[in-house]
Amino acid sequence: MEILRIEHLSKQYGQGESAVKALDDISFSVQKGEFVAIIGPSGSGKSTLLHMLGGVDRPTSGNVYVEGTDMYTLDETQLAIFRRRQIGLIYQFFNLIPVLTVEENMTLPLLLDKQKVDPKQLDVLVQTLNLQHRLNHLPNQLSGGQQQRVSIGRALISNPAIMLADEPTGNLDSKNSKEIVDLLQMLNKTYQQTLLVITHDERIALQADRVISIEDGRIARDEVIRP
Ligand SMILES: Nc1ncnc2c1ncn2[C@@H]1O[C@H](COP(=O)(O)OP(=O)(O)OP(=O)(O)O)[C@@H](O)[C@H]1O
Ligand SMILES: [Mg+2]
Image 1: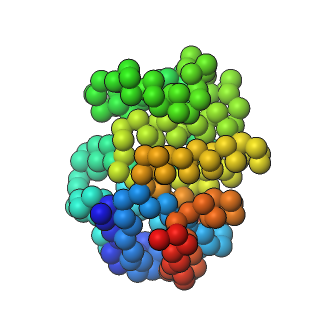
Image 2: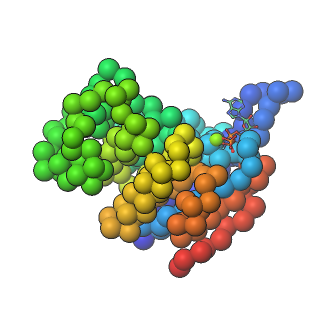
């Protein structure tokens, strides 16, 4: 089943002399349960692509369909709700809210969406992420790996259609990186979570089903590793 389709996506930053074409006519589609690694040199447009897929910033032209919804036909309010429900975003520097506990950070998307927390679902997620002894801690009382697990929990709490990660291990030592890679792999295999992960980390790229290389805002290669 196709879960994500990108058609002729382009993004230009700025105007005139200072204009930068960060994405230049990108098209591809992703099936449910695929684990896609996105690689490419610095400045090639990887983060820009993720932002367009995540509804963080609007493209200059082109379409992004998530489970059939043409995301950029939505107005700002609808887009914010759609993002919160359908897209889980993970960043290199975790982006947790420092004054909220682990549990509050994880359940924030539901709160913002005026939805109830299902205690059973939260419990399963907390166990999966091995955070059961950290629920009342603040982010600065956690290791980098634990903080990233909280941000993965926050991304997963609304059962998103797709999970997007921008260098999720970029700020972690090798032991914590391995834990996060194993966790992403498990979420993909056990729960068929669709994953798109930007990475310089070979271990992640090797776990993926498919590797898309971006160069100069275009797809240079799109290779299926595991069908
Ligand atoms: N907000 C912005 N305004 C202007 N130009 C931008 C903006 N964001 C990115 N760019 C430019 O767009 C191009 C693509 O940037 P992007 O951040 O997507 O690259 P990247 O592949 O993620 O690089 P890295 O591996 O270093 O994170 C770069 O030339 C960058 O300078
Ligand atoms: Mg980037």
